[in-house]
Length: 90
Image (cartoon, rainbow, N blue to C red):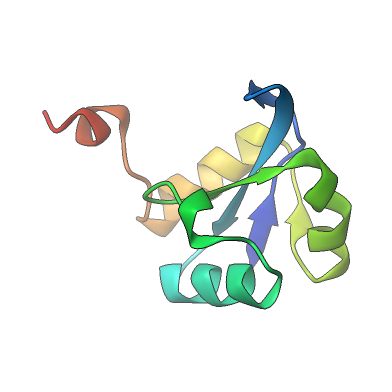
């Protein structure tokens, strides 16, 4: 099991954000987030949105930095990905 984080490049709310995922288990993801003071409100169905200023700290805590394409491929392969269609409830 691995926790992955992409580069902070997603703008929202006046800052940049990264995505934090597990490659196999949401419980593992929630545990990692809790241990590293990432609030549960940052969870968005299959990932956490984390601010750029937390990126280096999360990598130091064990998250493996990857590019966005690698992160999405890992999320799809894990079976945990929630598609845009599922997010819309269609």
